[in-house]
Image (cartoon, rainbow, N blue to C red):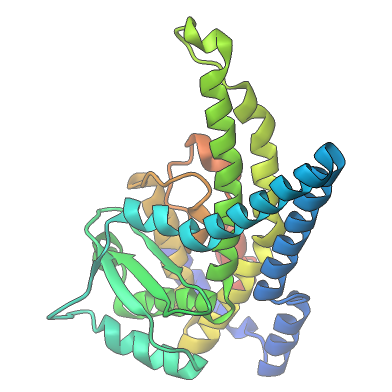
Length: 305
């Protein structure tokens, strides 16, 4: 970290001009996140109706309609609920020694957002994520481990990144793809439990999980890609005006994810600024985050790490 900090000073002069910053942002956003979500849902719904009709005529069309309705309900009602239940976050009340609510309100004002709710997780792991939908207030969650390991400017930079996700409606998109991918994996687990050899084998086979997991990966990659994180990295730096603090926060969070990993529900790591899971976790291959070193090099130069 010391070497990283020393080399940063030489690289910070490579900052982008404001015009270049917004031009790059415009190039990265071909379709807005909300448009991607609705396009995805329309395609899946039409595919469900067409497949149902081809397989069963009018009756199949009816079941295809039921499947499409069920998918929408599952996504919008249960898209991010499992993550929130797993995290066990508590709202911030009373004393706020880190001045989190003030920082959150100030950044939200600059973005034209309603200030989201803020909750803390009592965990040694460094966690930071946000959830939200267009019709209700967003929610930002941090862990006590993150607050203890990061400095004030670094915490503010992390908050800026999470508010960027809410500003770009990434959390809405994440919820949609999470619900869809989890539905696919849930079907796979259900079929694996019915797999006849598993009734007598000690080591359970998972043929359906192996077959359907790539579909879950494709669903995630449809709407979650490197550009989402790059765009919010740029926006966070623009908001806090401190590349060094943001880059060091990414560096620390990546290191903490290795020393203090956190087990997440499948298909939810993309909510987080840095994937907090163990690098060897089974669901690690579903990760959509770009490499942390790549993110830092984009911000401060190729010779800074």
